[in-house]
Length: 499
Image 1 (cartoon, rainbow, N blue to C red):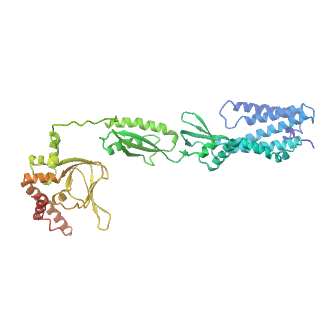
Image 2 (cartoon, rainbow, N blue to C red):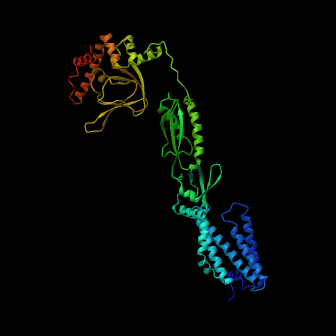
Image 3 (cartoon, rainbow, N blue to C red):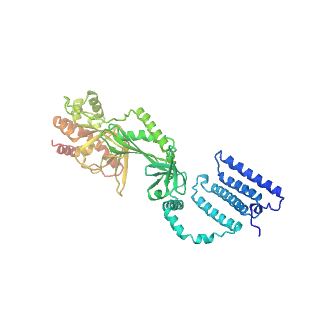
């Protein structure tokens, strides 16, 4: 039986010699030109497969000019078959690789293993068919050699099997951004020995698979990946105003997702600044440096527009002043007097009487959702609303909360509990950033002791308000509290203020 050759396998043996030679020469030249062309540009299929096919044809043509059935002729015949099939195998696997989900970017460790197995099978089949050499007996007697080689290649084999394990478990895919120790990069692929990462600075990292499988690996390939920024801003700026400015910057930055919504949180009070954490999410972690740059740049402009300075480390020196305690600048004192006149039961007092209340006036700020007054709590002060909005609520009979209304400037609240000493009948909750003037009980104690007539004036107005409330309750069919008449109110006030 005639040994197989490339010519017989391709069906050229039945053609005239000159025609079969011409076909093989054309195929050889064509494959060589394609391989050469693929070397000079970006390619989807490697040039090696075409080069191997061209070498296979060249070996088969060389075999034709040698004496038939000579050892050299048989060797070239076997080489031609092996090279041709190597090229066909490599080309087939390249094309199959492109059909995989990740295409040209997919890791190639399985492809390489399959290629080696097919190469080995091809060599054994060709040698058996052409030279009658049977390699199965050689493989059966190589156990000792296998142990020696295995010990020598222990680390290499560890990298190979670690790479196979990672491809089976898929902790990451080509194109994912991962962090390994102090390294951050995009996965290019998994090779025999190492996994390849490409950093932002285009550095190519080769991390041995064995090391990678033993360490903690952070994968940023989730649908939304978070990034944090810390910024220190002045302590004299209300946090909720600062949060509004920073949130506006985050919401307007390209690449920052709307869902999950960006967050701005106070995380610490430093020596000279309040630390804010800006947390935002991105669909692609590869843009995190560009996103950070845009956010930090835009924050500078936003702070400038809102007159918020970026603080430097500072020390505050307190110096004694000759200004008496409680004394305010004239403009501020006049403003407070005008605000006190907005309270109906203080409207009839003179400027001198109102000025007597100022030493016990305090200005307070509250953030959204803070409670200014608790239902059932002690009533030791009243609040005049300067800025913002508050909600009045009380416990409902069946449990839960009953919304009683919202107040805006120039409203006031807390006066009944202040004047009678009874517990608060409702809670007051800030629904925005709120600023209030707080007037405590001591202010009225001093006023009533120095000007007893003020108690009669205030009690008369408050009694009128209580009467109107009782009338509304009777109209609505609710029983009023008969104790709260003028005599009861004056008695409670004299008892509370020790008059």
